[in-house]
Image (tube, rainbow, N blue to C red; front, side):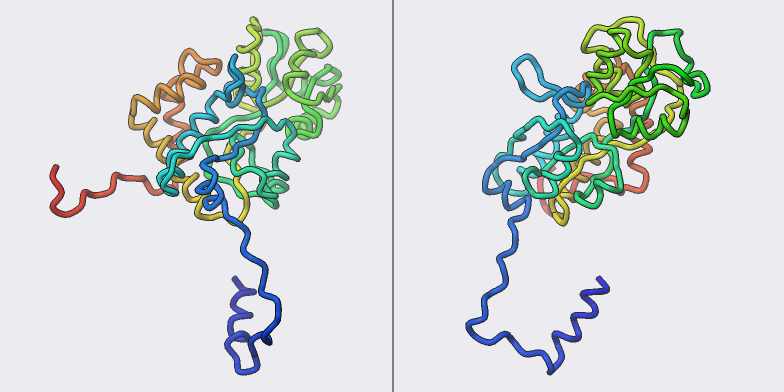
Amino acid sequence: MALIACLGPALASPAYSAPASGTSAPPARAEGVLERVARSGELRMIGPADHPPLLSLDAQGRPQGYVMVVATRIAELVSAAVGRPVRVQFEAVTDAEPLTRRLGEGQAELACALPFSWARDQMVDFSMPIGLSGLRLMAPAGRFTGAPALLAGRRIAVVRDSLAETQLRGLQPAARLQAYGDLPAALTALTAGQVEGVVGDSALLAGLAHQRGLKGMALTPEVPYLRYALACAVPENNSAFQHLVNRAITQLLQDYIAGDATSVTAINRWVGPGSALNLPAQQIRGVFDALLIGVEPLRPAPAPAGASR
């Protein structure tokens, strides 16, 4: 804004003259997200396809999980805004770096369930949070309490160059870290006896263990080593689209708190009672309440004057 304020008076001053005729026109403005979606009818979403219960593929190769509940609500609101049906087109992208880069370069419009980082924030914009998660240790029940002091000299798996690796090195420098390309590979190493535990996102660890039918595993400590919010990332400088994303998320969380049957059923399937995470509905409502602090509640628009009731 300061730069614009400085340029404004200069452009209005008598010393400024218009470009001479024949001067090439400025380049056309790049197509915005809503313009592209209105033209194509597709909302391109990217992300890992092996992160249950957040995002994975079903037996037919279709994306499923809590992220898809969020993305569907976003697509519905975008559809109303652009005046045509909009469907979510998913493409699996594993590494966080190309995922962020592709969003930044406009090759996709949406990626959800990402922890915020300052490095990513230089390339993309983040929505309001869709949930909370944290870093915990998965191992056979009774092996660890989660206390960092007891991890010294123990073989612990992490995802290479991840937040978990950085955090564990700070918590217990004497742990024997084993770095893997992704969380599924780290969990495979645990079940094969190559490591004694895995530190990673607790929701993803629980989801993967449930998907693989692993029994006797425990997540410790009770309070995560580090807690963080999960959000959706969108291309930078597309405020109209980001606004719709935030409204869709807000409405979804509000609907769950209010007991809307469709929203409660959709969310509970992935994170609620009986799911891989098995979170009590009261706990989910408490988290959503906290995420909505500072956000103006969305209320139904008043009926037009004279409309029948």
